[in-house]
Length: 212
Image 1 (cartoon, rainbow, N blue to C red):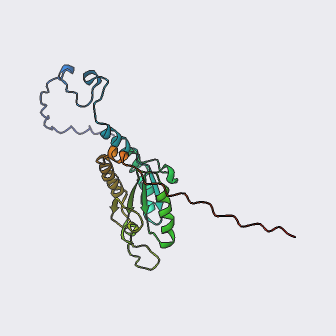
Image 2 (image 1 turned 180 degrees about the horizontal axis):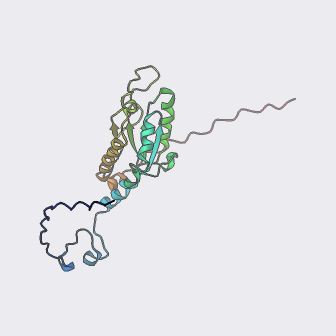
Image 3 (image 1 turned 135 degrees about the horizontal axis):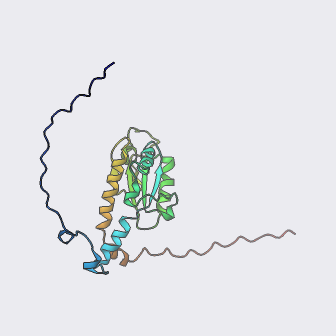
């Protein structure tokens, strides 16, 4: 049995190689901050630095009330990775949260709880209405559903969709970061806070009748 020789390789044209000029280290351009040039001191405005700190450390408080909460969970997973924007620390405590993300249908039974949790959040705080149900009530035009969470909370950003994709939530987060960067934080801190309510004297205790 005789073996056939392997087929010859086709004569393909040799690609032309362009002559590249070697780049020396002395000819490279360094773009950005370089401690050898600028030194160890960064000159900026205090307000810009504070806003830069705040916008990259927004801790969300997820108010997952319906199917939009599944998309909120997906935004925190590895595929979309909300930690790239400094918002991976989701706290279920209003004392440690900065952004309330209302994801889902808000019923009148739940509206009082949402309002109470918002009031327990420390200033500064922001609200994102995620989805059609949180923004306008969605398809639920009924007596039991609140027609928009903006009737009880000051909403900063609305995310359209039923439900919106995680990319839409990340886009809203980027827009919120741009809003935080423009806020006059020093002017806000210098303003006096609300006056404390007047002290109410305790009610007089009823007299305890001693048995005869």
